[in-house]
Length: 419
Image (cartoon, rainbow, N blue to C red; front, side, top):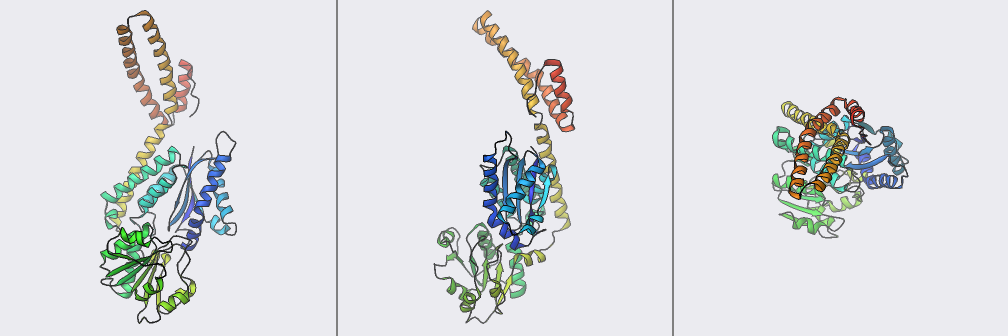
């Protein structure tokens, strides 16, 4: 079955549109699952899928019976979830075959991120695979696992990984450029997801004086307990925390209720300095009116992306070469897998002959002799089958497997049921 990816990234859509897609992601993925389970066809159009939804991208990786069928099924699921946003559907890009492999490997290594070389994307790819345990086929699992292996190689063997950049670090760089160093300043983080942990670590690295965390879902206490030097803001304490903050970082999941202008204005009524607001949420956690307040300076994901620094050319080349090697190794193994049905059929044919000869030996000879004959037959068959098995894998990679299968049928009457 061909591998297909349908989706969009920061290259095609803004952060608000990507947030909308991420919010509807679970419903879209569930729609594909229902379609597969309700299919009466022997081979469903989509055998499996993995959803990768982050602040940078929304992508559906498909193991599909056909290219066009898989693409249309994925787009139909997106249209059903966003019936009034056909512009978003039209922005979707499609990759198939080897292009899917090259794309995911580049994504997992941070080469296609808003901030090139960002450290968080590999974890997001890993989380996407973990969330798709019931919907991912073995082919998709191998694809994602090999992409993660290559991402680890880029992180450990190239300067791209050594830079350890993230949206949080670039965003805080911009805050410091506009409002001075974070050293000794009070920070309020709204949100307790994985990204909040990245933000807190980056604030600590820059010497923030006091970090507080607030959660609309009541998770602040648990988050603070697992992160040293972080205090939880109690329920109802957001306004007071806003009043004493020197910088506000917003990183809640899509769908969170945004802070409105009256709430922010009241909280900052006595403040004498502008409040830098780093909005890392994909959906935007401040209303437009709140963003327009004169005593706040809001930095959004789109602005961070526009100011993201270019990586050093040498580091990029090294990372791209690592990706190319990873892609080549993956394709080499996967192409060899297409020979598996032929090799299995050949081994099954030989095994049946050995089984018959072993039965005859058992009837004609003492147990010790029969066992020795059986061992000898298995040893000889293993040696004889080694070269044909290796040759089948080689021919699968070079396009000659059809002739191999035809020769098996002509010489031995072996029929390969499925390839």
